[in-house]
Amino acid sequence: GLRVLRQDPWECLCGFICSANNSIPQIKRNVAAVAASAGERIGPADDDFAFPDATAVAGLGEPRLRELGLGFRAPYVAAAAEAVASGAWDLATLSEMPYEMAKGALAALQGVGPKIADCVLAFSLGHREAFPVDRWVRRAMIKCYGLPAVTRDAEIGACARQRFGRDATYANQYLFHHQRLTARPG
Image 1 (tube, rainbow, N blue to C red):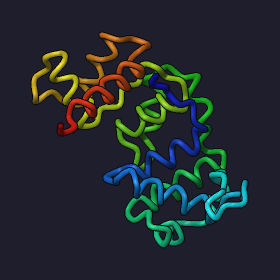
Image 2 (tube, rainbow, N blue to C red):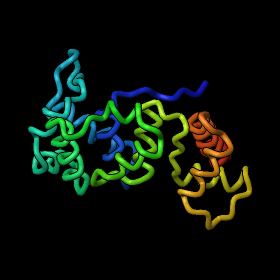
Image 3 (tube, one colour):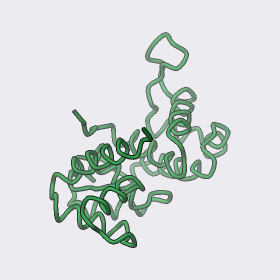
Image 4 (cartoon, rainbow, N blue to C red):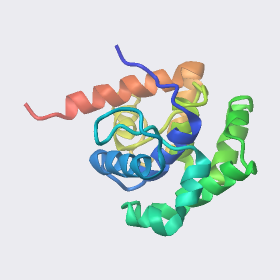
């Protein structure tokens, strides 16, 4: 019953930049604050806003993004917004590139490391060989596939791509879910 999203690339990129060293409730608050500040109202509830396009987010600027609670992530979101809004960066072309090239291009953006790049590639750009490695997936790969505890995240991703190929993203989700379920007390 697990699903892999095909989220809008711009919204996905912003959401995952906001995820760096952040909790899920705080990520939701950050994304909601940006939407409420620059997004279009889409319903009657107080929080019914669409996520704004890159031009609208660029218009907020870094100081306003900091006021909205993005903290150290604000300059990264602002820079990404400016790059996309100006046309210097076309996220849609990343889906047409080979995986490694697309990952390298994303990782060239400030504030986007290998994990965030893999998340954006997997959950918005259709690169099913992407394999984001967080602590849960790391633990699952070590436990289920006998990888040494000192294995680097890049090596875990490479192992997963070799083992699962174009199904790596799906395997990632099952491993993540399994690890979270088995880690719960009682």
